[in-house]
Length: 254
Image (cartoon, rainbow, N blue to C red; front, side, top):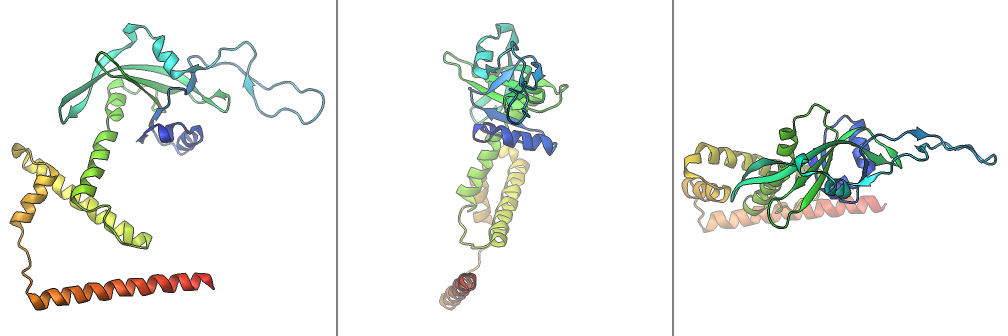
């Protein structure tokens, strides 16, 4: 799984993924704190009164957790290496990467050992992104690089489904109806992508593939009587959905 820092900033969500044994590469904010070395954990001594302490903490004098942007700034140049992320619309996309084994902060104590992936753009004004991953310690760096670039093609697929195939053009009121619409749109996009790959020598885009199909596929000819019958059928369907919706609402109010 891979997602932006809107989800990556939630340590509880990451802990749930780890408990479910799901691998993730999560973008995290620059203020995320980690330890380079695992600190000692102790149970604070009681004060003699009240309930005994139940929550462990870092031992006194232990190392303090660092922000991931501070970790990035303190790395030597030799820690960074340039990788090819993917072939983009404007050519090959490259960035500098650094990979560290760290312990993220989880409720003021170190969590399980994880990867800290630092990705820095090339150029006069570099920008750095920060990722945490629970991938195994033996994971190859080029695998982490490849996964860090997977969000872009997924977002591109959603844009094509919405712009060309009507993913967001639905008027359903139930989960089953919405799920049916989304499934058909995704299948249609899959078909168009396969068509584009089969005709890759012509470098077709998804919109161009839609134009090609609209020009080739036969269309049903409508005369006046057929058009009126089609409109009547749509009106009956819409009215039936309207009645069903209001009937369900009336039953809920009882």
